[in-house]
Length: 335
Image (cartoon, rainbow, N blue to C red; front, side, top):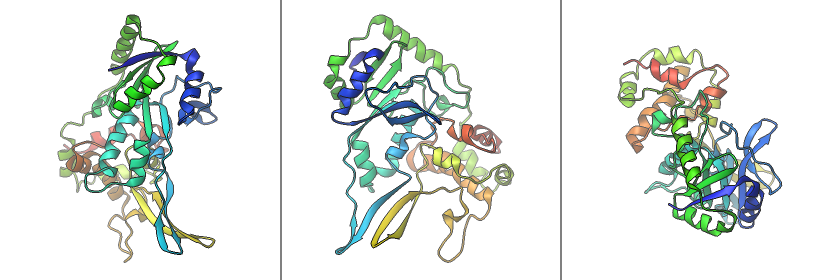
């Protein structure tokens, strides 16, 4: 695979060159931590960070978006965005999450044109993790601190330089387009990268997910779900921060003289998520909603797509106001 070395002192020139044809987003220190924000050549990117609070799924499945507007001729679909974007610094777990989202939104039978257009027009450059957080467990769910699934280009931070390796045809073309700003990686850099990747992989504690779908099916009627839900506030933060949660609702609204149809992210943690027009709600108990979220990610997804829809990013652990830990929840599922 094509490789290149980009010195950090040339990163501003790199941003300037890329920004001529695409919007360039990268890690930037903000008032509420490091965020994936649009960079200018003058910005100083952050290279030392755990992960972004908000996963990059927001670039592909926004919190809300207008998908149709009612005009004189009736309801007309909003054209999908054709904006070209580069996302730099995406952690490998988040890049892998997009491969799972693809299974939902770019299905052989049902294709979401808005999601597909954004995916086709976005180049993903991952940045390998040098120091996984204590809440990370990607290695237990088919991931790796230096994984390449979902990436067009994989980058490693070697201190004074970035080592880039293209994975896809789009990545090959991108490196070739900007080859003038880069050099060939040295043998020492390649050895440093390999050592860094190996060390990072040893810093996570394993989580047992063996036979998890079968265990969950057997525990469907267990009172464990009600016990766990006693510690849950039902706020939904775990769902909105999860890079693979993708449930949404559609509603029509009137804004002045304009009628429009809006798609907005929703969450199975909310009591009204399954409320039917008849007034019936099959999940009135918090325990049933807790069970649904866990079953969806670790059982139903495995049945439907052959994957556990969890990438071990740890966001739900870090941000839970009640200190719920999904690793502990899985361990509490009866054998």
